[in-house]
Image (tube, rainbow, N blue to C red):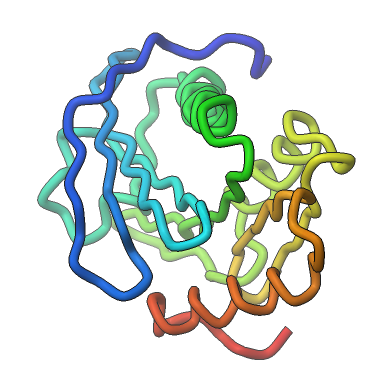
Length: 176
């Protein structure tokens, strides 16, 4: 089901003046609709991947929308393909994401252990070897971290990445 993504293109790259965030990459692809994939590169080659339908670019809920195109598998696989591309070009890369809760006109899904998180977590286990990456998740935040095992002290590196995310994403719960 998640075996084929769409062809993607790098459309922009912007350096950022922030102590942790270094560069933002903008990719796009066209499935049944056009999508934007934002990849934030933080210190120590930590990449955060986010995607949304281009039509929702100006929406404050662009990461939370559900479109009924029945194209989710290929859209998600394209984001995974971008992660694999980044890893191929940055062998020390680590990755993170927060699975946004769904918001519709009539309902708002709970942030905790949401449906996207459940799907994405399984896909991370399927596509990213635990021999290469330590898989760390926070169900309370629906957040996931793939820590590259190239680091000599995984625990110390992971702790520094988690502190960085708390600095940059103030809505994260600090309880595990």
